Amino acid sequence: MPELPEVETTRRGIKPSVKDNRIHKITVRQKKLRWLVPDNLPFMLEGYEIRQVSRRGKYLLFENEMGTMLIHLGMSGSLRIVKQGELPRKHDHIDFCFKNGLILRFTDPRKFGCVLWQTKGQGIHPLLANLGPEPLNPNFNSKHLFLRSRKRSVCVKPFIMDSKVVVGVGNIYASEALFLAGISPKVPAGKVSQKRYQRLVSSIKIVLKKAIQSGGTTLRDFTDGNGNPGYFKQSLNVYGRAGKECKLCRKHLIEIRQAQRSTVYCSACQR
Image 1 (cartoon, rainbow, N blue to C red):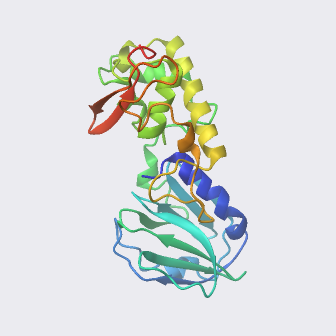
Image 2 (image 1 turned 135 degrees about the horizontal axis):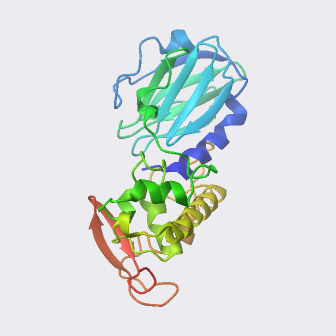
């Protein structure tokens, strides 16, 4: 699944071609995604200029004078810029055709993504209303994690993957950040001190920034806004390396299941 760095990489890739440009036509080939594509989407977008392209968690937000279109890439979706005349492929479900001759093309093989609309003046969309702070913003800090974790028995890894606690720290980056911070994913969140949360917050920011700079992680289905794969996978220390030697101590990495997700860690380096 594309995580925050992949979504942010996509946003940065498509923004120069989309922002301040006017949508000429929308072609919907498949409206049955996670939720039905709204019937009024062309009415709300065609003829209007995209004023801003932003991100909240894993949602991409496209704003015009009428409101905001929300796009989630789901399990395997992508957005890329193509030239007019490039024929759609099997899983290319929606085209946003711009006056500048470019097309923003939404692709989603598994159809778990979504394209939704929020009319201006209706407040915060329900899908965004209860999200925690952005991990790269200053208001995400050790005090926030420490206070939210008190009396919580849930393990620290699923705790930081909870979007109500902090958005966008998915399985890959949670595993990598905990390794960098030297914290075992099995430790109860309520037992982690504020000092150790300070290390964890710093590690989360470092890992996410590095992944964004590298273009995201090379997942099987992920490409950025220009169709290029990510390259952060070269730098992974624990994720996907079960049974291999720890890069620090050479002890074999252990794999366990947490919240129905694979977790790989080093029992010597992470306490």
